[in-house]
Image (cartoon, rainbow, N blue to C red; front, side):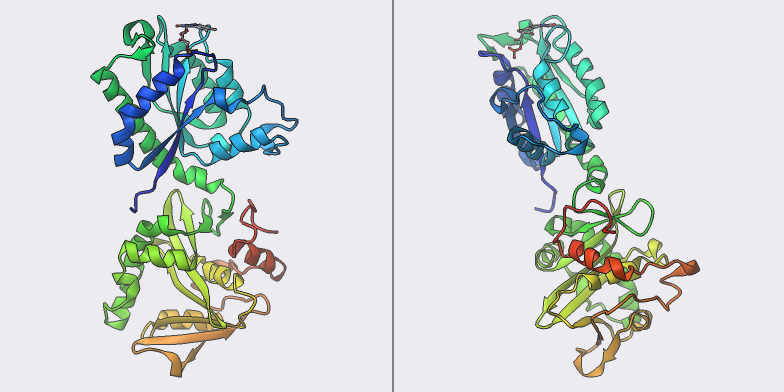
Length: 398
Ligand SMILES: Cc1cc2nc3c(=O)[nH]c(=O)nc-3n(C[C@H](O)[C@H](O)[C@H](O)COP(=O)(O)O)c2cc1C
């Protein structure tokens, strides 16, 4: 499946013995089961009673993400791995229960740019005051509340401790999940940009991250639009990057180290590399047509070169035999054509592994005097990042 799966925590807030909360959550899970499967959503129940967080007992502020206690680290990992939340909450004294406020206060970055929906229950107000109270707190954490909520009046809906069936309530729950899913996908670029393992890119607002099989659909779109020029230049449609299905792309994404440059959820550029025998093979360098001439291609090429396996002394790439613009660009980066290695219609180009900072002699790659080359003293840390050795680095290695 190429649809991205979403992991949604269903947080049950009440901690009292015999509380109503668990049976509300149980009804919700049953009511949403089919829709969740259809939309590739994994609903993960989390009981704050079972989680057993003590009142916030960390010395450092949550924004530092320095957690001394195992219970905090466990909670942090659970929230970090989630793409959204459904909070099943009672109303206590016109407000949210202390258990929810405490669970929210424990963390910071882990909540950011994720949607949160509320299923409330109570007496006269059906828990709506609890939700209003919670909304002003969650927005501080950059959680994004859905407009759709579900409010259950206990007196109308509960019989012998369980919810009576109600198709109207089922429809309201479906609307909540639908909005949560749409928001979660929409907010993904905002969360991704701030996650560990991403680095700021060369253009404002861009960021770089490793590509994986889940990115196959976006890679397919970029390949189709980028290799049309190659098809025209070489008078051939027999170009793998043009023909590959998303499933085939998914397969090679699992085998190659690949990096994508993103902005606001759009894949602007990419490149892949891997060791084959004693050579470091670089390929699939692509820059979206409207982003060309801004140094992105040279920047990506250097990144893939910097990630070169230490055991390789030669960098190697292939391009169309009649792709003159590509051949010139690679020559300006130190590559030379190896006549005897190209398959029909393809040229092989190699260069020794870089020993220092390169300069772009192709003005199209470094317009107006801008330089995208990585300084020599940063190459090794960039290489570490690119090869995944320091995926937790949040900023450009300095
Ligand atoms: C401490 C406390 C405060 C309550 N305050 C309210 C309230 O302000 N508004 C309301 O509608 N119900 C209130 N109730 C009633 C709850 O809505 C009802 O007991 C509900 O079952 C509580 O959820 P729980 O069983 O999951 O803990 C309160 C209940 C408790 C225990």
